[in-house]
Image 1 (spheres, rainbow, N blue to C red):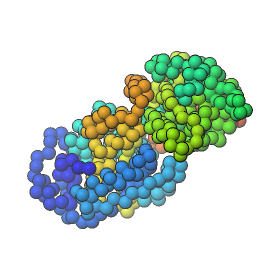
Image 2 (image 1 turned 90 degrees about the vertical axis):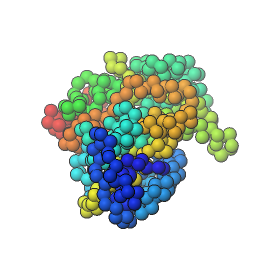
Image 3 (image 1 turned 180 degrees about the vertical axis):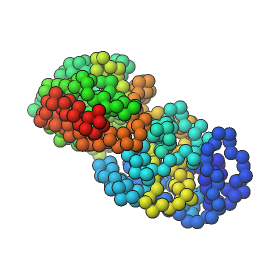
Image 4 (image 1 turned 30 degrees about the vertical axis):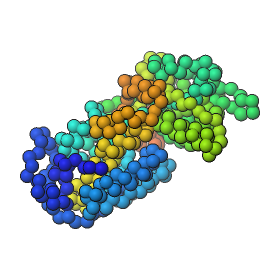
Amino acid sequence: MKVSKLLALTLAGSLVVVSACSKTEQPKGDTAAPPAKDDNKPDVVKVWTYPVHLDYEKDLKELVADFNKQYPHIKVETEMLSWAEGPKKFDVALNAGDPPDLYYHAVSGHYVNTGLAIQLDKYLTQEIKDDYLPGTLELGKIQGKQYGLPLTQGQWAWGGNKRILEEAGVDWKKIQEKGWTWSEFIEIGKKLTKKLPDGSMQYGLATDGTSLDFSQMITKNAGLVEVVDAKGNFIWNDNKILDSLKFIDTLMKEGIMPKETGALSPQQRTQMLYDGKAAVISKALPYYDTIIANRNKDIDAGKVKGEKIDYIYLPVPHHESAPGKTYVMGEGYVMFKQKNDKGEQHAKNAFLVMEALSGAKAGNSSNELNLPFVRKSQAKLFEGKSKATPHNWAAAQNFTKSTVTSIESELDVDKSTKLKQFQEQVQKPAFQALLAGEKKPEQIAEEFKAKGKQIFGQ
Protein backbone atom coordinates (compact mmCIF):
# COMPACT_ATOMS: atom_id res chain seq x y z
CA MET A 1 0.00 0.00 0.00
CA LYS A 2 1.27 3.47 -0.79
CA VAL A 3 1.28 5.49 2.43
CA SER A 4 0.28 9.13 1.79
CA LYS A 5 3.08 11.57 1.13
CA LEU A 6 1.84 13.97 3.78
CA LEU A 7 1.87 11.19 6.33
CA ALA A 8 5.45 10.31 5.45
CA LEU A 9 6.46 13.97 5.67
CA THR A 10 4.78 14.35 9.00
CA LEU A 11 5.68 11.17 10.82
CA ALA A 12 8.44 9.10 9.33
CA GLY A 13 11.87 9.87 10.62
CA SER A 14 13.41 6.96 8.80
CA LEU A 15 13.85 7.70 5.11
CA VAL A 16 16.01 10.16 3.25
CA VAL A 17 12.95 11.36 1.37
CA VAL A 18 11.68 12.81 4.63
CA SER A 19 14.74 14.94 5.28
CA ALA A 20 14.69 16.04 1.64
CA CYS A 21 11.06 17.15 1.83
CA SER A 22 10.71 18.15 5.47
CA LYS A 23 10.59 21.87 4.63
CA THR A 24 7.39 21.38 2.64
CA GLU A 25 4.67 23.60 4.10
CA GLN A 26 1.95 21.71 5.96
CA PRO A 27 -1.60 22.31 4.75
CA LYS A 28 -3.61 24.92 6.64
CA GLY A 29 -5.28 23.50 9.73
CA ASP A 30 -3.01 20.45 9.95
CA THR A 31 -2.31 19.58 13.58
CA ALA A 32 0.24 16.84 12.89
CA ALA A 33 3.50 16.61 14.78
CA PRO A 34 6.70 17.91 13.12
CA PRO A 35 8.93 15.44 11.30
CA ALA A 36 11.23 13.34 13.44
CA LYS A 37 14.96 13.04 12.85
CA ASP A 38 16.07 10.67 10.13
CA ASP A 39 17.59 7.97 12.35
CA ASN A 40 16.72 4.98 10.17
CA LYS A 41 16.77 2.74 13.25
CA PRO A 42 15.18 -0.70 13.13
CA ASP A 43 11.90 -0.95 15.04
CA VAL A 44 9.23 -3.57 15.76
CA VAL A 45 5.50 -2.79 15.81
CA LYS A 46 3.23 -5.47 17.30
CA VAL A 47 -0.30 -5.88 15.92
CA TRP A 48 -3.03 -8.03 17.45
CA THR A 49 -6.04 -8.51 15.25
CA TYR A 50 -8.90 -10.86 14.37
CA PRO A 51 -10.18 -12.71 11.28
CA VAL A 52 -12.23 -9.69 10.20
CA HIS A 53 -13.40 -11.69 7.17
CA LEU A 54 -12.49 -15.06 5.68
CA ASP A 55 -9.49 -13.75 3.72
CA TYR A 56 -8.34 -11.07 6.15
CA GLU A 57 -5.14 -12.90 7.06
CA LYS A 58 -4.18 -12.82 3.38
CA ASP A 59 -5.13 -9.13 3.17
CA LEU A 60 -3.03 -8.37 6.22
CA LYS A 61 0.07 -10.03 4.77
CA GLU A 62 -0.30 -8.02 1.56
CA LEU A 63 -0.80 -4.75 3.44
CA VAL A 64 2.29 -5.39 5.57
CA ALA A 65 4.34 -6.38 2.51
CA ASP A 66 3.34 -3.16 0.75
CA PHE A 67 4.22 -1.16 3.85
CA ASN A 68 7.66 -2.75 4.13
CA LYS A 69 8.50 -1.77 0.56
CA GLN A 70 8.50 1.81 1.82
CA TYR A 71 9.59 1.18 5.41
CA PRO A 72 11.82 -1.93 5.41
CA HIS A 73 13.35 -1.04 8.77
CA ILE A 74 9.99 -1.27 10.59
CA LYS A 75 9.16 -4.92 11.27
CA VAL A 76 5.44 -5.58 11.70
CA GLU A 77 4.67 -8.58 13.92
CA THR A 78 1.04 -9.67 13.54
CA GLU A 79 -0.92 -12.11 15.68
CA MET A 80 -4.35 -13.38 14.63
CA LEU A 81 -6.56 -13.82 17.70
CA SER A 82 -9.75 -15.86 17.99
CA TRP A 83 -13.00 -14.02 18.57
CA ALA A 84 -13.70 -16.27 21.56
CA GLU A 85 -10.41 -15.97 23.44
CA GLY A 86 -8.81 -12.84 21.98
CA PRO A 87 -10.58 -10.25 24.16
CA LYS A 88 -9.53 -12.06 27.33
CA LYS A 89 -5.92 -12.26 26.17
CA PHE A 90 -5.88 -8.56 25.36
CA ASP A 91 -7.42 -7.59 28.70
CA VAL A 92 -4.73 -9.56 30.53
CA ALA A 93 -1.99 -7.81 28.51
CA LEU A 94 -3.58 -4.39 29.04
CA ASN A 95 -3.94 -4.90 32.79
CA ALA A 96 -0.30 -5.97 32.92
CA GLY A 97 0.73 -2.75 31.18
CA ASP A 98 2.02 -4.58 28.11
CA PRO A 99 -0.60 -4.32 25.33
CA PRO A 100 0.37 -4.62 21.65
CA ASP A 101 1.09 -1.40 19.79
CA LEU A 102 -2.05 -1.85 17.67
CA TYR A 103 -5.20 -3.75 18.57
CA TYR A 104 -8.25 -4.34 16.38
CA HIS A 105 -11.35 -3.25 18.28
CA ALA A 106 -13.85 -0.45 18.73
CA VAL A 107 -12.56 2.42 20.86
CA SER A 108 -13.40 2.19 24.54
CA GLY A 109 -13.36 4.63 27.43
CA HIS A 110 -11.95 1.78 29.48
CA TYR A 111 -8.84 1.81 27.28
CA VAL A 112 -8.45 5.55 27.76
CA ASN A 113 -8.87 5.15 31.51
CA THR A 114 -5.80 2.91 31.67
CA GLY A 115 -3.64 5.78 30.42
CA LEU A 116 -2.13 3.48 27.78
CA ALA A 117 -4.35 4.31 24.78
CA ILE A 118 -2.61 6.90 22.61
CA GLN A 119 -4.51 9.95 21.40
CA LEU A 120 -4.04 10.22 17.63
CA ASP A 121 -5.00 13.81 16.85
CA LYS A 122 -1.42 15.11 16.62
CA TYR A 123 -0.56 12.37 14.09
CA LEU A 124 -3.53 12.91 11.76
CA THR A 125 -2.73 14.92 8.64
CA GLN A 126 -5.43 16.93 6.90
CA GLU A 127 -5.11 14.55 3.97
CA ILE A 128 -6.07 11.58 6.14
CA LYS A 129 -8.95 13.44 7.79
CA ASP A 130 -10.34 14.56 4.44
CA ASP A 131 -10.27 10.98 3.13
CA TYR A 132 -12.78 9.77 5.72
CA LEU A 133 -16.42 9.94 4.70
CA PRO A 134 -18.67 12.21 6.80
CA GLY A 135 -19.33 10.82 10.26
CA THR A 136 -16.99 7.83 9.97
CA LEU A 137 -13.86 9.22 11.64
CA GLU A 138 -16.06 10.11 14.63
CA LEU A 139 -16.62 6.38 15.20
CA GLY A 140 -13.05 6.26 16.56
CA LYS A 141 -13.43 9.14 19.05
CA ILE A 142 -13.90 9.35 22.81
CA GLN A 143 -15.06 12.71 24.17
CA GLY A 144 -14.19 14.34 20.84
CA LYS A 145 -10.61 13.03 20.83
CA GLN A 146 -9.35 10.51 18.30
CA TYR A 147 -8.23 7.15 19.68
CA GLY A 148 -8.88 4.82 16.76
CA LEU A 149 -8.90 4.66 12.96
CA PRO A 150 -12.10 2.89 11.86
CA LEU A 151 -11.66 0.16 9.28
CA THR A 152 -15.36 -0.72 8.99
CA GLN A 153 -18.70 0.64 10.14
CA GLY A 154 -20.42 -2.56 11.14
CA GLN A 155 -24.16 -3.14 11.38
CA TRP A 156 -25.88 -5.43 13.84
CA ALA A 157 -29.22 -6.70 12.61
CA TRP A 158 -31.14 -9.95 12.06
CA GLY A 159 -31.09 -12.39 9.16
CA GLY A 160 -33.42 -15.03 7.81
CA ASN A 161 -33.87 -18.04 5.55
CA LYS A 162 -35.84 -16.93 2.48
CA ARG A 163 -37.47 -20.33 1.93
CA ILE A 164 -38.83 -20.56 5.47
CA LEU A 165 -40.01 -16.94 5.48
CA GLU A 166 -41.88 -17.33 2.20
CA GLU A 167 -43.40 -20.68 3.20
CA ALA A 168 -44.95 -18.86 6.17
CA GLY A 169 -46.20 -16.03 3.93
CA VAL A 170 -43.83 -13.44 5.36
CA ASP A 171 -43.42 -10.31 3.19
CA TRP A 172 -39.70 -9.88 3.81
CA LYS A 173 -39.36 -7.16 1.16
CA LYS A 174 -41.84 -4.99 3.06
CA ILE A 175 -40.01 -5.69 6.33
CA GLN A 176 -36.65 -4.72 4.79
CA GLU A 177 -38.19 -1.45 3.65
CA LYS A 178 -40.47 -0.50 6.56
CA GLY A 179 -39.38 -2.65 9.52
CA TRP A 180 -41.59 -4.52 11.99
CA THR A 181 -42.78 -4.03 15.56
CA TRP A 182 -42.36 -6.40 18.49
CA SER A 183 -46.00 -7.48 18.36
CA GLU A 184 -45.75 -8.06 14.61
CA PHE A 185 -42.68 -10.21 15.09
CA ILE A 186 -44.33 -12.27 17.83
CA GLU A 187 -47.21 -13.12 15.48
CA ILE A 188 -44.82 -13.90 12.62
CA GLY A 189 -42.53 -15.84 14.96
CA LYS A 190 -45.39 -18.14 15.93
CA LYS A 191 -45.98 -18.96 12.26
CA LEU A 192 -42.29 -19.67 11.78
CA THR A 193 -42.14 -22.06 14.74
CA LYS A 194 -43.20 -25.65 14.13
CA LYS A 195 -42.27 -29.30 14.47
CA LEU A 196 -40.55 -30.73 11.39
CA PRO A 197 -41.31 -34.14 9.85
CA ASP A 198 -38.22 -35.67 11.49
CA GLY A 199 -39.53 -34.64 14.91
CA SER A 200 -37.07 -31.77 15.42
CA MET A 201 -38.13 -28.17 15.97
CA GLN A 202 -37.92 -25.22 13.61
CA TYR A 203 -37.77 -22.04 15.70
CA GLY A 204 -38.87 -18.57 14.71
CA LEU A 205 -35.74 -17.00 16.23
CA ALA A 206 -32.36 -18.21 17.47
CA THR A 207 -29.72 -16.19 19.26
CA ASP A 208 -26.83 -16.92 21.59
CA GLY A 209 -26.97 -16.43 25.33
CA THR A 210 -23.27 -15.81 25.87
CA SER A 211 -22.95 -12.19 24.76
CA LEU A 212 -24.56 -8.78 25.23
CA ASP A 213 -25.47 -8.45 21.56
CA PHE A 214 -29.09 -9.60 21.66
CA SER A 215 -30.08 -7.56 24.71
CA GLN A 216 -28.37 -4.46 23.31
CA MET A 217 -30.27 -4.67 20.02
CA ILE A 218 -33.60 -5.16 21.80
CA THR A 219 -33.13 -2.30 24.27
CA LYS A 220 -31.91 0.12 21.60
CA ASN A 221 -35.12 -0.64 19.69
CA ALA A 222 -37.11 0.28 22.79
CA GLY A 223 -35.75 3.82 22.62
CA LEU A 224 -32.93 3.22 25.10
CA VAL A 225 -29.69 4.40 23.55
CA GLU A 226 -27.70 2.58 26.27
CA VAL A 227 -27.71 1.87 30.00
CA VAL A 228 -26.93 5.58 30.40
CA ASP A 229 -27.63 8.63 28.26
CA ALA A 230 -25.03 10.90 26.64
CA LYS A 231 -24.53 12.74 29.94
CA GLY A 232 -23.92 9.53 31.85
CA ASN A 233 -27.31 9.46 33.57
CA PHE A 234 -28.63 5.97 34.31
CA ILE A 235 -31.81 5.39 32.24
CA TRP A 236 -32.57 1.69 32.67
CA ASN A 237 -35.07 2.51 35.39
CA ASP A 238 -38.38 3.00 33.56
CA ASN A 239 -40.99 1.02 31.64
CA LYS A 240 -38.84 0.85 28.49
CA ILE A 241 -36.44 -1.63 30.05
CA LEU A 242 -39.30 -3.59 31.60
CA ASP A 243 -41.02 -3.77 28.20
CA SER A 244 -37.77 -5.05 26.67
CA LEU A 245 -37.53 -7.79 29.28
CA LYS A 246 -41.17 -8.75 28.79
CA PHE A 247 -40.70 -8.98 25.01
CA ILE A 248 -37.82 -11.42 25.39
CA ASP A 249 -39.73 -13.35 28.06
CA THR A 250 -42.70 -13.69 25.66
CA LEU A 251 -40.44 -15.09 22.92
CA MET A 252 -39.25 -17.74 25.36
CA LYS A 253 -42.70 -18.60 26.76
CA GLU A 254 -44.26 -18.86 23.30
CA GLY A 255 -41.51 -21.25 22.23
CA ILE A 256 -40.40 -18.91 19.43
CA MET A 257 -36.88 -19.23 20.85
CA PRO A 258 -35.47 -22.57 22.06
CA LYS A 259 -35.51 -23.19 25.80
CA GLU A 260 -31.75 -23.80 25.76
CA THR A 261 -31.04 -20.32 24.32
CA GLY A 262 -29.06 -19.25 27.38
CA ALA A 263 -26.46 -21.94 26.67
CA LEU A 264 -26.20 -21.46 22.89
CA SER A 265 -22.93 -20.15 21.45
CA PRO A 266 -22.78 -17.83 18.42
CA GLN A 267 -21.58 -20.77 16.31
CA GLN A 268 -24.54 -22.93 17.36
CA ARG A 269 -26.95 -20.09 16.62
CA THR A 270 -25.60 -19.75 13.08
CA GLN A 271 -25.62 -23.51 12.55
CA MET A 272 -29.33 -23.54 13.35
CA LEU A 273 -29.87 -21.19 10.39
CA TYR A 274 -27.78 -23.44 8.15
CA ASP A 275 -29.66 -26.56 9.27
CA GLY A 276 -33.10 -25.04 8.73
CA LYS A 277 -33.80 -25.15 12.49
CA ALA A 278 -34.14 -21.35 12.77
CA ALA A 279 -36.07 -19.09 10.42
CA VAL A 280 -34.37 -15.95 11.77
CA ILE A 281 -31.18 -15.38 13.76
CA SER A 282 -29.83 -12.53 15.88
CA LYS A 283 -27.29 -11.14 15.46
CA ALA A 284 -26.66 -11.16 11.74
CA LEU A 285 -24.50 -9.04 9.50
CA PRO A 286 -24.49 -8.11 5.81
CA TYR A 287 -21.43 -10.39 5.60
CA TYR A 288 -23.69 -13.43 5.82
CA ASP A 289 -24.41 -12.79 2.14
CA THR A 290 -20.80 -13.69 1.35
CA ILE A 291 -20.51 -16.51 3.90
CA ILE A 292 -23.69 -18.24 2.76
CA ALA A 293 -22.85 -17.75 -0.94
CA ASN A 294 -19.52 -19.50 -0.32
CA ARG A 295 -21.28 -22.26 1.61
CA ASN A 296 -23.72 -22.76 -1.26
CA LYS A 297 -20.77 -23.15 -3.65
CA ASP A 298 -19.24 -25.76 -1.33
CA ILE A 299 -22.55 -27.65 -1.30
CA ASP A 300 -22.61 -27.63 -5.11
CA ALA A 301 -19.03 -28.91 -5.14
CA GLY A 302 -19.84 -31.68 -2.68
CA LYS A 303 -17.55 -30.27 0.01
CA VAL A 304 -20.41 -29.57 2.43
CA LYS A 305 -23.68 -31.40 3.02
CA GLY A 306 -26.85 -29.44 3.64
CA GLU A 307 -29.52 -27.25 2.15
CA LYS A 308 -28.51 -24.24 0.08
CA ILE A 309 -29.87 -21.05 1.64
CA ASP A 310 -31.01 -17.74 0.23
CA TYR A 311 -30.13 -15.20 2.89
CA ILE A 312 -32.39 -12.27 3.78
CA TYR A 313 -30.97 -9.33 5.76
CA LEU A 314 -33.60 -8.07 8.21
CA PRO A 315 -34.01 -5.14 10.60
CA VAL A 316 -34.39 -5.70 14.34
CA PRO A 317 -38.06 -5.41 15.44
CA HIS A 318 -38.86 -2.31 17.48
CA HIS A 319 -41.14 -1.23 20.32
CA GLU A 320 -44.52 0.06 19.15
CA SER A 321 -43.76 3.52 20.56
CA ALA A 322 -40.13 3.75 19.43
CA PRO A 323 -38.58 3.96 15.93
CA GLY A 324 -36.55 1.08 14.56
CA LYS A 325 -32.79 1.44 14.98
CA THR A 326 -29.79 -0.37 13.55
CA TYR A 327 -26.80 -0.54 15.86
CA VAL A 328 -23.70 0.70 14.05
CA MET A 329 -20.18 0.64 15.43
CA GLY A 330 -16.77 1.56 14.10
CA GLU A 331 -14.16 -1.16 14.38
CA GLY A 332 -10.55 -0.70 13.45
CA TYR A 333 -7.18 -0.19 15.06
CA VAL A 334 -6.52 1.43 18.43
CA MET A 335 -2.94 2.42 19.34
CA PHE A 336 -1.33 1.78 22.73
CA LYS A 337 1.88 2.49 24.57
CA GLN A 338 3.31 0.14 27.16
CA LYS A 339 4.17 0.66 30.83
CA ASN A 340 7.79 0.72 29.68
CA ASP A 341 7.21 3.43 27.07
CA LYS A 342 9.26 2.95 23.90
CA GLY A 343 9.29 6.65 23.02
CA GLU A 344 7.81 9.06 20.51
CA GLN A 345 9.60 7.73 17.44
CA HIS A 346 8.17 4.28 18.11
CA ALA A 347 4.68 5.79 18.46
CA LYS A 348 5.08 7.55 15.11
CA ASN A 349 6.20 4.31 13.51
CA ALA A 350 3.18 2.54 14.99
CA PHE A 351 0.89 5.19 13.52
CA LEU A 352 2.48 4.68 10.10
CA VAL A 353 1.56 1.00 10.37
CA MET A 354 -1.92 1.92 11.62
CA GLU A 355 -2.57 4.10 8.60
CA ALA A 356 -1.21 1.45 6.25
CA LEU A 357 -3.66 -1.10 7.69
CA SER A 358 -6.57 1.36 7.39
CA GLY A 359 -6.09 2.99 3.98
CA ALA A 360 -7.56 2.51 0.52
CA LYS A 361 -6.52 -1.11 -0.08
CA ALA A 362 -7.71 -2.02 3.43
CA GLY A 363 -11.20 -1.19 2.16
CA ASN A 364 -11.42 -4.80 1.02
CA SER A 365 -12.67 -5.56 4.54
CA SER A 366 -15.78 -3.41 4.02
CA ASN A 367 -16.17 -4.84 0.53
CA GLU A 368 -15.99 -8.43 1.78
CA LEU A 369 -18.31 -7.67 4.69
CA ASN A 370 -20.79 -5.90 2.39
CA LEU A 371 -20.62 -2.79 4.56
CA PRO A 372 -20.57 0.91 3.64
CA PHE A 373 -16.98 2.16 3.24
CA VAL A 374 -15.41 4.52 5.77
CA ARG A 375 -13.00 6.30 3.39
CA LYS A 376 -13.38 7.96 -0.01
CA SER A 377 -10.27 6.21 -1.35
CA GLN A 378 -11.76 2.83 -0.40
CA ALA A 379 -15.10 3.53 -2.08
CA LYS A 380 -13.25 4.59 -5.24
CA LEU A 381 -10.92 1.58 -5.32
CA PHE A 382 -13.73 -0.95 -4.84
CA GLU A 383 -16.44 0.76 -6.85
CA GLY A 384 -18.60 -1.80 -8.68
CA LYS A 385 -17.04 -4.77 -6.85
CA SER A 386 -19.74 -5.37 -4.22
CA LYS A 387 -20.44 -9.02 -3.37
CA ALA A 388 -23.84 -8.42 -1.76
CA THR A 389 -27.11 -9.41 -3.39
CA PRO A 390 -28.98 -6.31 -4.62
CA HIS A 391 -31.91 -6.59 -2.17
CA ASN A 392 -29.64 -7.09 0.85
CA TRP A 393 -27.30 -4.27 -0.21
CA ALA A 394 -30.33 -1.98 -0.60
CA ALA A 395 -31.50 -3.05 2.87
CA ALA A 396 -28.10 -2.30 4.43
CA GLN A 397 -28.14 1.16 2.85
CA ASN A 398 -31.72 1.67 4.05
CA PHE A 399 -30.77 0.72 7.61
CA THR A 400 -28.11 3.46 7.67
CA LYS A 401 -30.94 6.03 7.63
CA SER A 402 -31.86 5.12 11.20
CA THR A 403 -28.72 4.14 13.05
CA VAL A 404 -27.62 4.35 16.65
CA THR A 405 -24.01 4.15 17.81
CA SER A 406 -22.43 3.40 21.16
CA ILE A 407 -22.92 6.15 23.72
CA GLU A 408 -19.46 5.39 25.05
CA SER A 409 -17.80 7.95 22.79
CA GLU A 410 -19.74 10.69 24.59
CA LEU A 411 -18.86 9.60 28.12
CA ASP A 412 -15.94 10.57 30.28
CA VAL A 413 -13.62 7.72 31.14
CA ASP A 414 -15.07 7.25 34.63
CA LYS A 415 -18.64 6.81 33.35
CA SER A 416 -17.38 4.61 30.53
CA THR A 417 -15.64 2.32 33.00
CA LYS A 418 -18.77 2.13 35.14
CA LEU A 419 -20.81 1.32 32.03
CA LYS A 420 -18.57 -1.64 31.25
CA GLN A 421 -18.84 -2.77 34.88
CA PHE A 422 -22.64 -2.68 34.72
CA GLN A 423 -22.71 -4.53 31.39
CA GLU A 424 -20.47 -7.37 32.52
CA GLN A 425 -21.52 -7.70 36.16
CA VAL A 426 -25.24 -6.91 35.92
CA GLN A 427 -26.62 -6.82 32.37
CA LYS A 428 -25.13 -10.05 31.02
CA PRO A 429 -26.00 -12.34 33.95
CA ALA A 430 -29.47 -10.80 34.27
CA PHE A 431 -30.40 -11.49 30.65
CA GLN A 432 -28.95 -14.98 30.92
CA ALA A 433 -31.19 -15.57 33.94
CA LEU A 434 -34.17 -14.30 31.94
CA LEU A 435 -33.42 -16.66 29.04
CA ALA A 436 -33.06 -19.56 31.46
CA GLY A 437 -36.37 -18.72 33.12
CA GLU A 438 -34.64 -18.22 36.46
CA LYS A 439 -35.90 -14.66 36.98
CA LYS A 440 -39.01 -12.75 35.93
CA PRO A 441 -38.85 -9.45 34.02
CA GLU A 442 -40.14 -7.51 37.03
CA GLN A 443 -37.42 -8.95 39.28
CA ILE A 444 -34.68 -8.04 36.83
CA ALA A 445 -36.06 -4.52 36.29
CA GLU A 446 -35.89 -3.89 40.04
CA GLU A 447 -32.39 -5.36 40.14
CA PHE A 448 -31.31 -2.97 37.39
CA LYS A 449 -32.63 0.00 39.39
CA ALA A 450 -30.79 -1.06 42.54
CA LYS A 451 -27.51 -1.87 40.78
CA GLY A 452 -27.75 1.30 38.67
CA LYS A 453 -28.01 3.39 41.80
CA GLN A 454 -25.13 1.51 43.37
CA ILE A 455 -22.77 1.80 40.40
CA PHE A 456 -23.78 5.17 38.92
CA GLY A 457 -24.98 6.81 42.12
CA GLN A 458 -28.44 7.52 40.66
